[in-house]
Figure 1 (tube, one colour):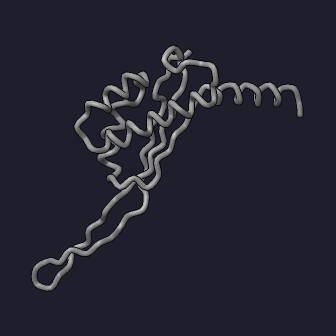
Figure 2 (cartoon, helix red, strand yellow):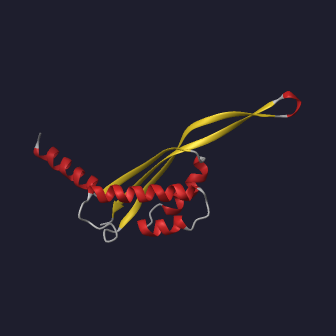
Figure 3 (cartoon, one colour):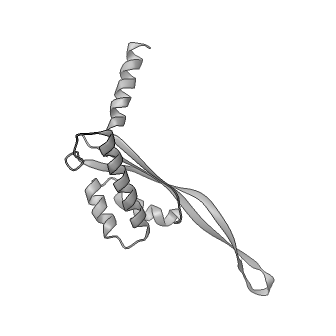
Length: 131
C-alpha cells in the first residue's frame, strides 16, 4: 500500500470514529408521516432533538426518540471515555426510505373492492461530532 493511500485510509477511519449510526427497519408507520418528524430534528443538537421529540405529539416521534437514544449509545461505545454531553453531537443525517407494503382489500359497493396499502419504512439516523 502506498503512502498516500494509507494516509487517506487513516483519515477516513478517523472521520468514521466521530460518527455513529442507528437503523430502524420495518417500522409500521408510513414514510410520509415519519419524514415530518425527521425534518424537525435534522441538523439539531442531539439533546435539543431529544427534547423536541419528547414533547412532539406525533406517534412517529416516540420511535424516532428511541432511535436517537440508540445512536447516542452507539457513539458512546465507539468513543469510550468521552462524554456525549460535552462532545457537541448533532443529528447529521436522517434518511426515511419506504419498506415493504402490506396489501389488503376493502369491500366496496356494488361488488367492487378497493385496495388498501399499509405502508412501512426504514429509518437511518447518523450523529456526528461538530468541529
